[in-house]
Amino acid sequence: MINLKKLAILGSTGSIGTQTLQVVDQFPEQFKVELLVAHSNWQLLLEQARRYQPKWVVLTEESAYQRFCAENRDASLVVRYGMDSVLAALDALQLDMVVGAMMGAAGIAPTLKALELGIDIGLANKETLVSGGSLVRKAQQKSGAKIIPIDSEHSAIFQCMEGEKTCARRILLTASGGPFRNMPMEQLKQVTPAQALKHPNWSMGRKITIDSATLMNKGLEVIEANWLFETDYDDIKVLVHPQSIVHSMVEYGDGSVLAHLGRADMRIPIQYALTWPARKDNSLEKLDFTKLAGLEFFEPEWEKFPALSLAFEAGRTGKSATAVLNAANEIAVAAFLENRLSFLGIPKLVEDVLNHHNLVDIESFEQLLEIDQWARLQAESLIKEYHQ
Ligand code: NDP
Ligand code: MG
Image: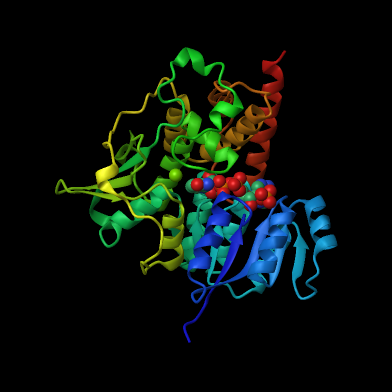
């Protein structure tokens, strides 16, 4: 009998989490889901628990946990509340892989824990690397656990670098350009959350969809690429590619460029991370080149989308700058979605918080949490000042 790969899915109720379960459905003889973690969506978690029969589920929102407990009829299922319980579950279950698909910096603690335990991670949750990259690197080096990227661009780069990482010269990171690529700068002032939530090519969670509209998502991905592939910022080139067919490319010193192409379907990179180093057939629709109208590549509009330069700058600055960038952006996006901040206010707020910050080296998780909290409080107080 083949050994089943035992999985934990952190953020199982989200866009990546539910698509991960669809991949699991395709390979029932390969994977066994042992742990599901969600925040608020107890109804969907309950359905998932009934279907996949994990040993543990954890909810990180208390009222959702209580509702789950009230409705759950499976006495053998371990149901817990809170981040400490997520860490306890990672400890208790003999896992082979953790899928990091939570939203935001909440993913840092379980990612570090999994790496410390030597468990490989399929990582979608880019904020963890942006904020805690140095701690993640240390934990990974200590245990030797692997991080296999799920973010489509990074999965593409990872695949283009297989076996040839050391001689790669440059990363060409593609970006769709988001829904406002053709909108004049002047009109960006009036953009509403409903407009920003309409991504042209991908259906994703709300936070990453807004990040895609500001191009902060690409900025976060630049920092993510720097940590994952140890590529200098000068050697990461962002290219706007509105068709989202080329998921990224790697340029080599001999002039060869390797590209990864595919349909815009996250189940492809999720599956690759889960089955790596093997590549498995699946029944997903394949790319039809005769139906492609053309592939275009443009320089990003730096002035129109300042979030991208802010991220490059924070990445080059290093130390605590990227943790501050990430935390301020999380607050800015939430405030924009609640109509408390304008669209152009998002990069402005991030820049203002960075300007108020005194850089430090990040030595521990506790210190990172303090900096993250400081940036969130600073961002909230600046939003209040903007309205005075
Ligand atoms: P969603 O918003 O769809 O899902 C987020 C998941 O995280 C949900 O399960 C949610 O639980 C959970 N969650 C939210 N807040 C918390 C919290 N404070 N503590 C613990 N869990 C929490 O996001 P996506 O699936 O789109 O994105 C997840 C991650 O993957 C992000 O980091 C994103 O950048 C990255 N990513 C996503 C891509 C995509 O195509 N969607 C592509 C590449 C990367 P609940 O729903 O129960 O409240
Ligand atoms: Mg991406």
